[in-house]
Image (cartoon, rainbow, N blue to C red; front, side):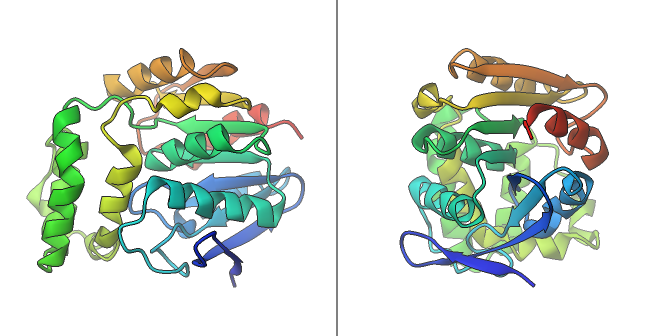
Length: 254
């Protein structure tokens, strides 16, 4: 059963704390809930208390209504405050979120980010994409909004057979969060705020990922004062928990 904390605007945010040791909050990306992070949490629970939240509008957390990036940061920091966590990890758009949180909170001592999407190929188009997503959702076209997300974020590599996959309905059920994801990512550039991160930072990419992932980690490393880069051989954007867990365990200090 989840526990709850309250964000600055009164929204209830659900989370679970698994294991023993110093707390590490594990933040999922697009279409992710706390269940998405459970396999990774189970691999870290012997050394850390792995905290897995439901981001706003997902799972057992409160609803979303086109929230700002700052509200999402507030949600995450509320979870960190409730659990005493000074360590954050995020995947993809969740990686952008943990970096923004570390930029504004001196309580965060260590932050790790796996392939934050900060190297957009079409920054002008990115500015309009959230509006397009909202229009599709307002018209009751959650399925089409999900397709639009994949076509943009996977460089057009969308296969119509995906719509018949057993996992597709679960993605469509979370399509209402996609405008919030795009708002968080912004225009795809490196957020200027990350230059204020005082925490130790680890920027991770997969050796088999597209070129943008390595470019993103390099651009961030040039901006974040105390940042190092790690590459996990053979991994792509959908990194395996078994490959990621040792890297995080070695980085986060007990």
